[in-house]
Image (cartoon, rainbow, N blue to C red; front, side, top):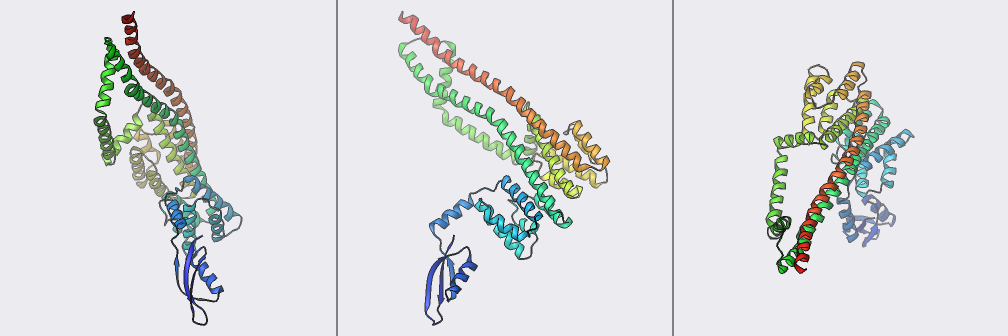
Length: 404
């Protein structure tokens, strides 16, 4: 709890000062008044624990799981009859995330000053997305805030689940590749040179595999700083190029056309778009604002351009599915499901079905990807390590022959 230093006067006019703990300035004023003093100044003491707390809050992350839990709990409390302010008191008290507690405290103050919940949350755009805000605003206007909060919580949970599946599915192959690179680098730069020194001392003629590996090892040891510098320059150049509009478009298109991984990136983009459109249309957001928000959350410039074309087409009064079909980026099944939803007036249900289908497809693709990559990486690693072992053992056999 913060510590405040106060100055005041007694009823006799005598000046007094001291320090007290209180949750805020209102609390300290109340406590000093209870002591019978009139306050002249209040200042918060900057203690080391206070600095540590500020440092911890600054580097604390508010995750999407925190926001989904906030939305779910707020919906339940509102549904049980609590007011927004009463619900926020409970949320602030039980929040374990100090940064989120700080944000909710500020939101509560803004609501007390007359702002609506959506406008108070909108003052924190890094935490609450534009999709969250626009959907919540529609819920406020329609009087269905509890239902909208539940849908937002479900949407965030689905998004976190999808992202977690992709990360966990790609983590194992990435760990295998990293381990293989470090093992090979260690063998080539630290183990093999010792054997090469022994062979040189024994004047054993080196076979071709050993000579190749020896030259490669020598190159790594002598030119490592040039290699490292070249790698850093290439990475920085690629990152700089990707930040340009043309570079980002080319990079995102390349991702979609990659063997094995391209299908995964495409299905993740389709499922995210469909899930976003489902929550927005179900909450009552108009189709054009929904498309704009879905475009912002696409995560891929190629798909963002497709959604821009859809927005232009819909603005002209044409159908929704035609530009998706013409783009060639959406599979025929997804286009047909959306077309049926548009023709029957059940767009939210259609988008939900597409999202469910492609989330399941992401699971299947990840399993297939892991099943393919694991043996390929193991075989490549075995071949490289086998070549290193062969380069070491061939001269040893020659040494044995010379000794005999």
